[in-house]
Image (cartoon, rainbow, N blue to C red; front, side, top):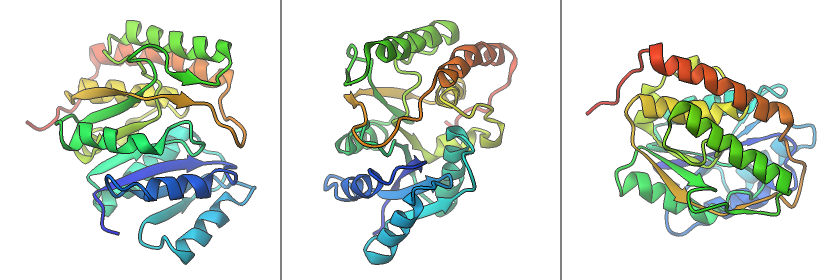
Length: 249
């Protein structure tokens, strides 16, 4: 199906979720969304499930890039961005496979960019308080205060800096030097938002409710948050001395 929008879903061992999330995204009636799965060599057969769906009924809406081994969230999205730009998509989304991001919120992110004129829209857990369900309190506090810390250090006016539910207009990804993105974990999410802001792109946070996964195993770790916490100092330094490409007027 012809669509101007594609949802990139990185996967590693998501066999319990992948078919359901693909069906949920492609069944949205408000706007058609295609799906690109970036699989990092899942030993549980995630990629085989995607291939089966492609062959049976989603051959024109579902696409797959297979990579060898776990190469990092950031590199998965960079590979997906490059694929989507080459394929001509105008609106390119990041989304998790585990239903922590509600597919029903995709049209709201799309509208913020396609209809309201923003360049980046973020599904934000913290723009209207703390909208997180079924996370352990320690993890909620770690995530919330990490975002507060990032906002303080970078002066970036975004409440949910580590959010992984995002829509980019293609001009944003064409302007950013994707090969220069340095972080691979959740600091990647901070770096992308910070760089987009430095390039002059308009960002909107759209309130969403984040629900902890019910199936499969979380890929979060303390090291991921450590990268985010210490990496922002480098981003702040770059903000002072690096020359960023500016968005076209």
